[in-house]
Length: 241
Image (tube, rainbow, N blue to C red; front, side, top):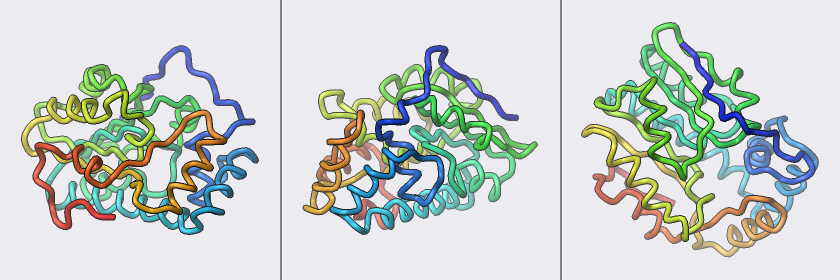
């Protein structure tokens, strides 16, 4: 079963300005990007040439995390917030290869991503795949709508890949994550990635991106990223850089 739940007021982002989902798509070698996105991506790579490799490694980690959660932890439900544009081996594909009856809800507040949702939403007959047009700043709304596809009395894998860095400190991203995790039952898992502020090259690359983009990205210290996992037991190897 596939489903798309779209907010009524979405519009496609201005192609003349860099957009985070399209820039990330460019860094991953995709084709769903514009000259403005490619220029922003090249500016990032000028300061941090390994950034494209970082983007690829994040996708590899997503595959490993989802595969572990499905095969080793026995999870059959996933809530992927800030999913971005479709690439190879999205959450539902990895999960449903391991367990065809897996149910996945994707969440993004991005009409461009929604426009590509039909490419993303190809569930197995045994499972389910839904897409919500929603903002991570509204965790209660996300949970209420995700419950139409997921059984929130059973364990859920919460995937937050690169999304919390888009939330400034003044919006208290830690509180947003707590609201999500506290609503999930025992046996649930959190997988999260974000950029750290410990390297000059990455700081300069993100500053170059922020100077061009409508939406800014916020690097944080490893300690502040670790705080997202408060209340969780970290699995080996724990928080890594």
